[in-house]
Amino acid sequence: MAGATHGGGRIVGGAARLAWLLGGWLHRGSNPYDPTAAPRTVTARGDLAADEQATIALFKAAAPSVVFVTTLDVQRDRFSLDLNEIPRGTGSGFVWDDGGHIVTNFHVVQGGQSFRVTLADHSTHAARLVNVAPDFDLSVLKIDVPAKQLPAIPVGTSKDLQVGQKAFAIGNPFGLDHTLTTGIISALGREIKAVSGRPIDGVIQADAAINPGNSGGPLLDSAGRLIGVNTAIVGPAGANVGIGFAIPVDTVNEVVPALIRNQWVSRPALGVALANDQLARRLGVSKGLLVLDVTPGGPAEQAGLRPTRRNEDGDIRLGDIISAIDGQTVTTRDELIHALVKKKAGDTVTLTVLRQGEKVDVDVTLQGS
Image 1 (cartoon, rainbow, N blue to C red):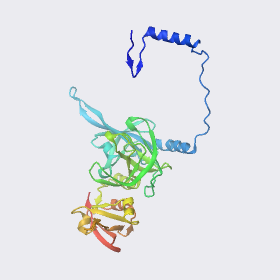
Image 2 (image 1 turned 90 degrees about the vertical axis):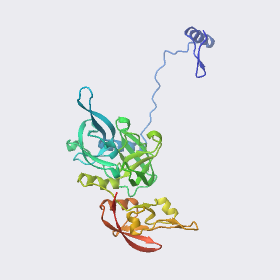
Image 3 (image 1 turned 135 degrees about the vertical axis):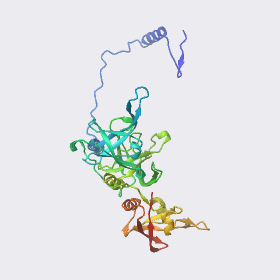
Image 4 (image 1 turned 60 degrees about the horizontal axis):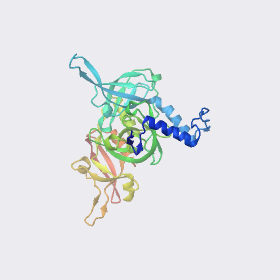
């Protein structure tokens, strides 16, 4: 009986296979099987490399602070009319303090009616929603457990991060237990759009894989300190292609305490678009924040801040360069954001700007975001 073909090979029937094997043995003149075959001797590997040991130690130290967040919806059974909790979504989070406060993304808890937090010891606890800041894609939950079960994650700073330094993401992608991915910081000062539709400035871009379920988990530096909250990935259908974004920790460290204090965080807006560091340097601006554009009708335009424009000859005319707010020097977007977080809509701030080589103070009345 002729055999079928599959993938370029020939599937041989039972009788034909036996004849083929026997023919092979006769052709080679020996049995191909060796009854003395045994497992190979394991080659000693020696000590792990120093960077491997450091990564392992980092994971062991940080993982107990990382949690799994389940958002639940309540639906009524159409037959029994009983109310049932139905999982709506999942994500990651981390222990903020020993008071039971858990930080995660706003989009992880959005639309949920109840919440559960699973700790590193696999115990699961009902959680209460404390507060949310949609403009920053941040939220705070609270669980009631003993402080000894709540190792708070060490907090670092994002103001001195550098492109090229190592970054580590810990989370629960696809509902799996703690997963560590590693990479580097790919870019700083990115801007992404929050669920609310408002832009989030100063975002960290890293190539440590941030997969579905990692949202809300921590991004760490090589010292194991929190430097950001993983919030989004860019890729087809949510697949990771090495472009992930995290809310910078300096922003988190301003917003989260305000949420816990029950102070609603509504980011006041200047109504400006700022050049990133690379573009500013290309345009010859080494200090301060270059205003690229102003929002029509917004606070900055009403106050007379000048945007960057091309003149009729095609030459670039630089806009105002912000160097201070209320007398406080600002050199990065994060520093400006942190100064604004302390303000509220309706407050008036004084911006010190460099305009055509001269320092000018401009009073701007902030609008709500």
